[in-house]
Image (tube, rainbow, N blue to C red):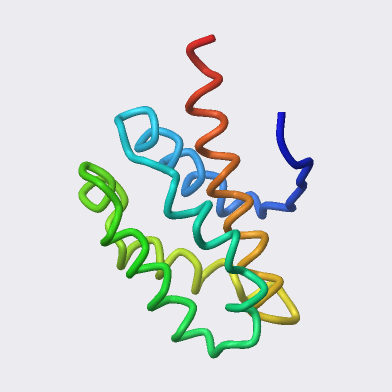
Length: 112
């Protein structure tokens, strides 16, 4: 159930998504990504640095072991490397968060 989404992921980014899925399987929460996704339209016009700061803030606020398994700085850096293929940082953020959701989905579905 839920919203239908799609995203294009460059092959070079697949190991990052796989790593996230491993961390979600290890107990990291994906709530921070849902909070960011819900606020994506408000974040879309902000400078990239502000988006990265909000990514770090949301992950730091997440329950343990999330900040330990998905270090806030590494996720913000991953966004920086991912966003270069997009015309706007807002579009990059929406796709980046969809990849985060996808990694979480893959982690939950693997055991079923």
